[in-house]
Length: 268
Length: 209
Image 1 (tube, each protein chain N blue to C red):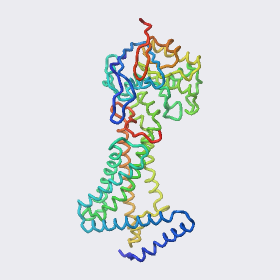
Image 2: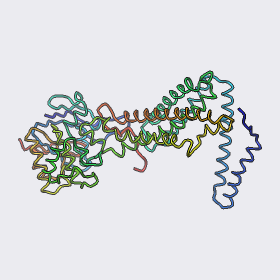
Image 3: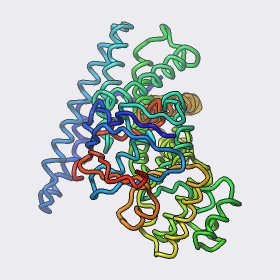
Image 4: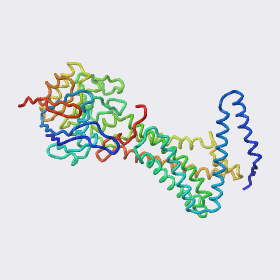
């Protein structure tokens, strides 16, 4: 592969665009200048650190360190997914449900992709495992958090309808079905949209990156297709798991609707 | 016969439940029992507890069989709770009924027009919702009806029709626990009268004595 290596002067030049924006903001008294500069600095520091960490990880290529890094990524994704929910489960369920679903889905899809399709040597080579997991987790996190949020909001909103069915002798599974399918539909929409728009509306980032790095576009596309499948699979498994376990948690062995297992919303 | 032994709300992991002190009573077949009390005194919570919609402690027997021996869904078909405000899961009225024949007869009997089942739910008035949710339960032929203000939104004439249908149930061997704010209705329907205050159920009077 041949690609144009950048030096620090190039980065400095690119940062001029931010400087121009910041200057405009100050001139027009928008008050955005400071925030813009801080965000830009954060981005530089965070990415530089990630670059250094990845470089170190790649040079060691230790399965333990790679696994540990992936675990940290999952735990952060879990926190992120939980923070996006308006109403949550009490206690550890809130964090555990989303994180557990993402971990299961992410790890299954990652290992499947690495051992059967992409097959680096060794299969846990962090150069492949970590970026791949990043892409899978980013999308799975969206699906899981949307699915959980819709599920929980759905049972709260439709409490009367669910209990009406339970009162008439429906099992919890049947009474929850409309809410479950709504939650899953919502969780799948970003993935379906992403696949439909790929190549027409948007050029996927990974493919673009490979092309910039000098890869043959057809090869880059093949990679992207595999990644898209893995992402869709991960999001699907993760959302199914999260919504399924949320449903289990929202009912019990006597087929009741257990809203007492949710935290109250502030402002009620 | 429905036999309730020390039924109360159970503490759950994360919430201390609303007040319901241990209730024990026996409800013979063909008998209607009334429960009065101010709003928030625990009447609905009592009915929900019998229908097994909230975690409880204590035991309930229907014809000698303990509630936990019966699948929850089966129990709620036999001991049907009709809340004051009904829930609807389909956009159309008809979607809430498996068999429209008997439901249609009851709807006519309760003074509703025949094509009500083709209506969207949002077209229903409060009183129509109330009658339809009662019909929804009646067509499943429950042994015990737990009714929470079944006629609060109805005029006198319609109330009489609904009460007539409920009396037919009693004569056929069904039994009813009736929560009602209307003293006249409690007198007309029930032979045993109870009063709920702060989650404590107490006997008011017993006309059979």
